Each structure stands twice: as structure tokens, then as C-alpha cells.
Image: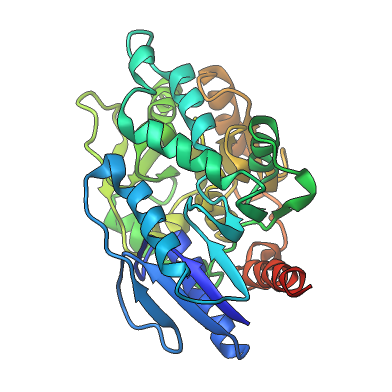
Length: 361
């Protein structure tokens, strides 16, 4: 197959980027001809034809301008399949890795302080993103959609006239080897965690969406000195912090954070399907997450985690933390192959090959 893959900015790091990198490698290995259309990229991609699509402008118009520029570039070529990882005008397959922007704004309004709610959806950026999203989720412009959770599938069906039969669930996958080689003792020593301490872990940047405030609220309620909380990610720490909270900043070796911890607590107000849940489970950590995270679907309650209906329910979060402290080391983890990047790439390829066969008819 000759394929066009669209990703506005491509780098060697990040969950979506690692997924695309593995997919490109599999395409080249399988004798296919992948073409990547991107505004910018880092690193060398052997066997991949790179097409620069530079655009200018600020955040308000950049995504729309990229979609316009890619549409113009695609008219110069002929492809068996056009696969977009961005909201663009026309594609055979779209991967809705970012979920539904309309629903994200609804969640922001729902969880914002009352005085902020009128301003949450304001601004040209959000108006342009919703217009672009409406074009992407129009079956006249997109033939198939890949989602990474049933939650996102439902959101698309409920908000757009897109046929459910053309939406395909392909759950995220991660690099299993990486999350099996974390160094527990050395990392705990690095952050001053004693052998008998229970270490809770939060991983993520964009703290409003990922619910750090709910995690801190529950941690404050615990009032348990042997319990510590390690926060990994980019952001400015709040001024008033409970004792025992450690802000590590971004960690290139985040696998060591998982190895050091005993429990992941991650309470987003909207996540299509966060990789941190799979990363924790592969690292043999039970998970407490919210039902507003599509990755909660891979958690088996009472066996390897707890799903909280509302992240604001501090009592439920505290109860879940205490339960898993008592169950330390006893969680039953899902089969690792179900969380692998290789499984994810294989299932994605199957959708792309199906779309190519349809296009040839």
C-alpha cells in the first residue's frame, strides 16, 4: 500500500509519537510505502517519505491552516489510504486519539469554578476546533474512525451523525520492555522514600484536565505520615501543599517512578484513554482513576484498581486509597500482551488494509 499519514508535529517522544513511529516501522517492514505529512519532525525515519507542511499563525488558526495546507498537498498525490491523526478535512481513516473537543469543553464547564464557566468555551481557538471537528466527524469526509476507548465511540455517536459500524476500537499500546526495567530501590532512595512508606504516584501534565487537585485533596484528607505522593509532570506546584508531596517535574526515566510507587492515583475530568493507566498496570501497580478516563475500561475493579464515578468524590477516593494500601502487592494484573504496542499496531494495520480494499472496489 501507498499510504499518507498525517501528524502536525512529530517527535521521537510522547505516546502518540511512539505509536506512529512503531506503525511507520511496521509499514516499512511490511513492504508498504508510507508518506508522512507533518509541519515538523525530529529524528530520522528510514524508509518514510517526509512531506513538510509548514504553516504560520498563532494557536487560534494554526490547526485550521494545517488542515487546509494538507488538503492542498494531498491533491498532488494518489494514495491507497489517507490516515490522519489530526482533525483534517478529508481522510479515509481518522484516529480520534484526542477524543471529542466538544465533550472536553463540556467537562471543563462542568468542573470549573462557577465564575469561570461562561469563559471556558470562548475564544477563536475553540470555535475553530469545533468547526474542524465537525468536518472530521462527517461521514462524507471520513470513511472510518479508530477510537482508543468505548467512551470516545459513544461520544462520537451521541454528538455527530457518524455510523457506529464504521468506528473501530483499537486500544492504546505501550512499550512493555520499558516498563519492566524500572529501578525501585534506587528511585525510592533518590526521592527519600523509606522502605516501609507507601508511595502514591500521579503522572501527567495539564493538571486541570488530569485532575491533580482532586488527588491532592484526597491525599490531604488521608493524614497518614507513612504515605507519600510523587507528582511527575510539567507544571507549577500549588503554593499550599500537604506534607509528603514530592514534585519531581518531568522525568525522562518515568518507568523508574512506576517501579518506585505502590499505587497510581489519576483522576482526570476528561481523558480519551490515558497511557498512564496501562503503564501502571504493566508495572504491576493498581490504579485509581475516574470514569471520565476511557482507560478506566481496562481496569478490573477490586482486582487491579478502582474506578471513581466523580473525581470530586473525595470520600470515595480516600476509601479506595486505603483499600489498596491494605492490599499492597496483592493486585491481579491483566495479561501484558493485551497492553502491548505491537498488538495496537497490528490492529491499526488491519483497519488500514480494510479501508484500502474498500477504496479499490
